Image 1 (cartoon, one colour):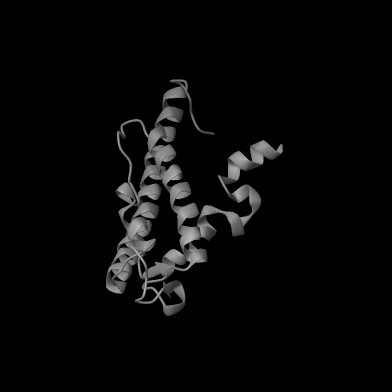
Image 2: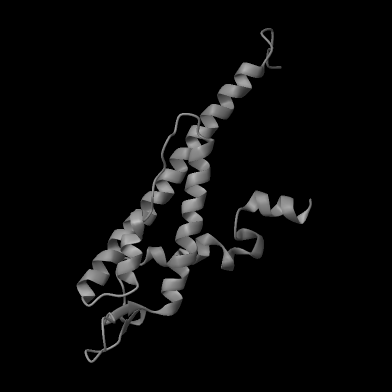
Length: 153
């Protein structure tokens, strides 16, 4: 099996192993709430419009890599579904990510995380739904291709 075939079979990111895959990037989504180590408090003496609270760099980077990759999976799976004209959007207009990149209010940061985490859970259930739709289409296509006098045996 060629390297490009392997990449296509395991999905974007998995060709470099689990640690660099979208699934690994989104492993943080299991956190129900943000912990002190997840948030950087820049203090109250900031210049200009800098937000006081931001996610730590590793956490934010994993979301900025994982979410677009998962979104791409959702889009491609939905495009393969015959009657589907739209697909689930994890963070429409990047509202949650913008807040997680910086907020003057810690409660707002926490609320954005809880909302985004829930949307990530929903993205997985939507992906499973698209997958089930594809299985039904594939089964239907296989049934259509059978000769009329086909019998199992």
